[in-house]
Image 1 (cartoon, helix red, strand yellow):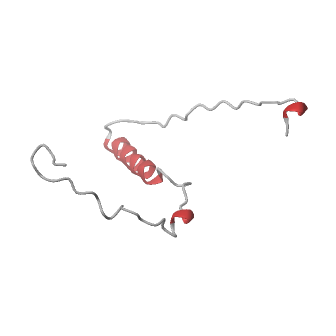
Image 2 (spheres, helix red, strand yellow):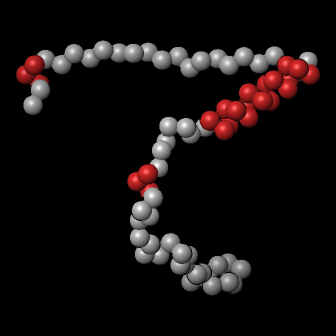
Image 3 (cartoon, rainbow, N blue to C red):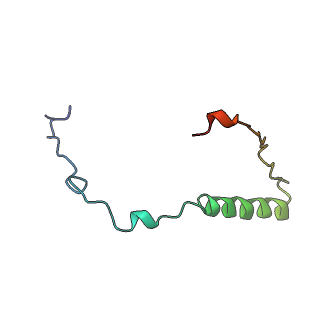
Length: 75
């Protein structure tokens, strides 16, 4: 199969038949987005210091719901 520009399609051989990495089970997801959060905080501090803008972080509203199941539904 060829691309419209005439070049042949070549499959990415680095992903072909790869084994799962032994490090994949050690991935921690708890700090995702923290570097972006710090960058935003630094930008907001700069804006405030320069008199450009005052930006306040607005918390995400969370509603906690209690669900009570009858004892018969438990297995």
